[in-house]
Length: 282
Image (cartoon, rainbow, N blue to C red; front, top):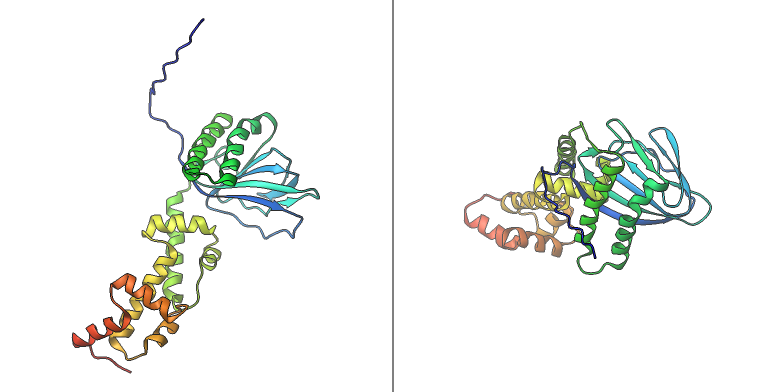
C-alpha cells in the first residue's frame, strides 16, 4: 500500500479580495413585465436552477439556460430576468465584494458548461442549506461564499475594483441620514428608504450599520426620541399628540421606545424636566 502525504504550508498571506454575503434568495418566476433598468453597488450572482430566460445587462441581451451562472458587477445597469415559457427558478446571492469579476471595467460575466460546473457543487450546497435551514446554516453559507470566490478566482482571476465602495456607501448613508432628519415625523419604512437610496434593503442595513453604528430604523427612532424629549421638556403638548406628531404607530409603542432609550416613561421625563426648572410653553 502506498500512502501519499501532502504538507500544506502557506507561503504568503492570501491575496484574494474579500466578499461578504449580504442576502440570498430563491426565485420561482413566470413571464412578467420587464422592470426598469437599475444597478447595485454590490455584486449579484445568479445561478439558473431550472428553465431558461434572458436578461439585458450593460446594453446586451444575455441568454441564460439551466446550470448557467451570471455575475453582475457593481454599477452594472441591467433589467430584471425575463423567464421563458417553461418553469423558471434561480438562486440569487448578493455579495459585498471589493473585486471585479471578469476584469476591471467588465459589467457582467456569464459562465456556462464546464466553467459553471466548477461552481455547481458549492451552489447546490448553498441551496440545500437555505432550504433545510438546519443549525448553523448561516455560518455555513458564509463559508460557502468564501469557497465560491476562490473557485471564481481560479476560473477568471478577480481584480480589485478601482472605485471606492466605502466612499460610495458613506455617501449613500449620508443621503439616507439626511432624508430621515428631514422626514422623521412621517411614516417611513425600510423599503421606502432603500427605494430612495436606490439600494437593496439588506445592503442598506449592512452599510448603514457599518457607517453609523446602527440600522436605519434604529436611527429613525433615535431621531424621533430626541425630538420628543424637546417637546416634552419645552411644551405642554399631550403625550399622545407628540406620539402622533412624530410618526409613532401608537402611543404605547412610543412609550415603549422612549423607556427603552431613556430608562423612564415620557410622563416621568416631563416631570423631571419641570422639576429642573424648564419653562414649558403651550
